[in-house]
Image (tube, rainbow, N blue to C red; front, side, top):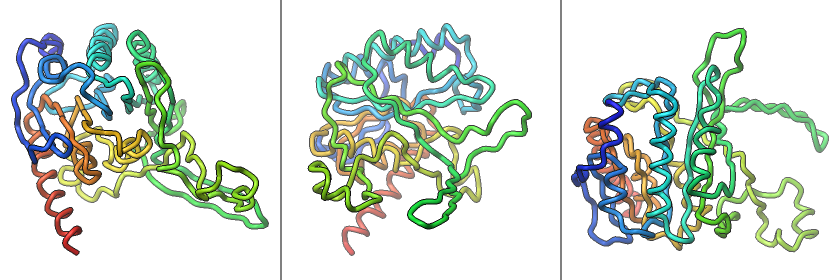
Length: 300
């Protein structure tokens, strides 16, 4: 896709797929540019949560989008997008923006975050850990674990990139979170007795989230999109924001629909925009399949 068409917000995206009519549980997918959709379809302050991953502008081979445009133009586009996020986000809303880079061009996430500073407040920085090796000796035990995987590189200069950023933006930096909804058990149970905040037996997970991709046997079938995040990442964002106060989730860069799948599982409404009709067709198919699986689980 050329830059001028990427930034053209004159045409309104057309609804491609809808599931349920109740706003609290509706899943609506639109074919078209998200800038146009956010301006012409969504009402101001109507979105409680945005979870998305925009193009990184690092040369990823998408189906109909050029991911290697001039950096200045890319950042201007992200700035325009940030202004629309500010328009549609509710006063207590959150944007969880997943963005990565490549070892030879590590500045992209920081430049994007700086650009969005013009419209939003960076409240938290989360690290999505895709792979990690832990070698530990504590409590009289020696343990090691090697989990996850990443795309390896062959380089004498760079280290394999095994994480991506999730920037948590809000309108004013003061949005309360449900931190213990994704809490983890205390390693030392004596802390439960020492700290009043430990009454539930879990502590804040912190800003390192280990969420692996499922193992890919057949790339075209298992991962038809070159840069998607797993639905579990979206579920974590929904929970930590506070699922009980979410009416509508937005994914402006829907891809193959993992945000939609997560929202369906969590029982929250969702709108998604995607410019690539082939990706959107995959998203529709996956959503229908996931819906059938969810019904079967409920029946059990």
